[in-house]
Image (cartoon, rainbow, N blue to C red; front, side, top):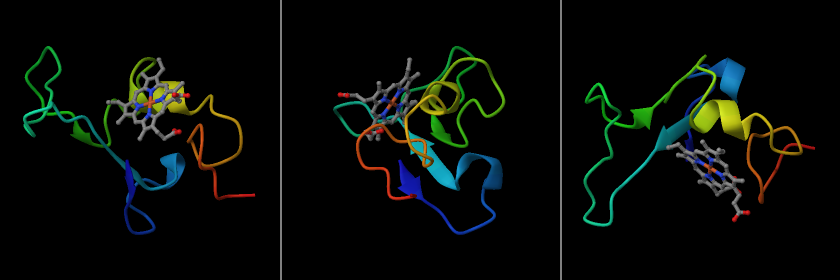
Amino acid sequence: MFKREKGYDTENKDWFWVKYKPNGSLHMNPKKMKLAGRIARGADKGCIACHKGADGDDMVFHTNRIK
Ligand code: HEC
């Protein structure tokens, strides 16, 4: 995950989500879409849905920086 500019995805704290394989290429979903960007935004499964459940207010489990 990395923070993009404000407004990239305001609903989801402007995070860019990405899932790499060990060889540096990108994982794909079953529809062959690359897992990079606003992954599974609005879906009930996936990066965003699960990370919404993290404590704090920045959708991360370990390094929340929003008080
Ligand atoms: C089913 C729930 C779930 C899904 C889906 C999920 N994550 Fe996570 N993620 C977690 C949990 C729980 C942790 C903390 C893991 C730990 O304690 O070791 C975590 C940790 C992370 C971290 C380390 C920062 C942090 O939050 O502490 C990153 C980066 C991350 N996930 C990215 C992603 C990306 C990108 C995707 C989608 C490709 C994704 N995650 C999908 C549950 C999920």
